[in-house]
Amino acid sequence: MTEDEALAEFRAAGALLEGHFILSSGKRSANYLQCARVLMNPERASALARGLAQKLPRELRNEIEAVISPAMGGIIIGHEMGRALGVDAMFLERPEGTFELRRGFSLRKGAKVLMVEDVVTTGLSSRQAMDAARAEGAEILAEVALVDRSAGEADLGVPFYPLVQINFPVYDPEDLPPELAAIPAIKPGSRKV
Image (cartoon, rainbow, N blue to C red):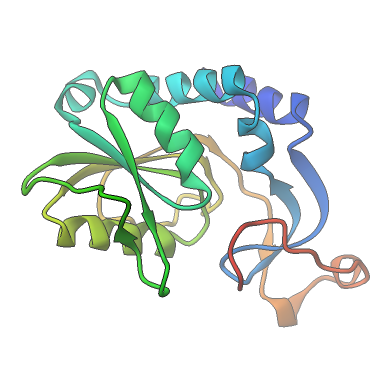
């Protein structure tokens, strides 16, 4: 799946939004890709996951023993990546603010894991999720994401394979352009800032 084909799926789902958005990082943007909306259709979610799986080098795909993703945003695409790769998919939660495996999920020591995210902006959430998986004994081989909003600047410490790279301008809340400052800000994601 090409980047243009993936963006066409976002457009078809009404998931490419314009306005004034507060991102999970606390930064602001005039554009937002609502991954939950594009993933609400199972066929579309499956196709996007297959597209992501195709981004991985074959030798890496063959090593992956499990997929892990952070809740909330990564759950659906993580599940679909597990299906595309033929491995179990688990998710990490933050019941007390720190990622942890729950619900009986566990990773054996040395398990070769693929981290799956919906969107990477700064990479902080991904790094925290990877640290939690490593604390369980996992070896993180790489990360995939539907969308890289970092302009290629997120340092995840592992190879990173996004399906779409978006370079929408991102602003600090105190440094908004006038046209964005004139629009009320909304928080479309799942996390509190």
